[in-house]
Image 1 (cartoon, rainbow, N blue to C red):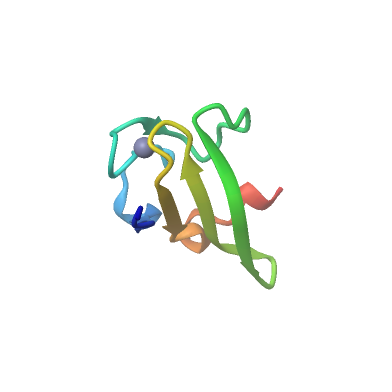
Image 2: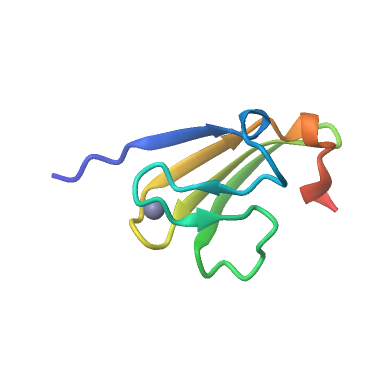
Length: 79
Ligand SMILES: [Zn+2]
């Protein structure tokens, strides 16, 4: 049976504009890429006006990644 592990990526620990590599397959993922070719958005968690969490699925290796640390980026993804 396949184990669905959720990887966690803290965007405040990432340099640049929030791009990071998939923890499993190392695909380059940019949260600002809205084409959803590389990943699909599974869910969001919003606190007030600020996006707190984004759960995505890497379309290459199908692993789930939970992104945190948006608040320190100004919640720009919400616009
Ligand atoms: Zn991946």
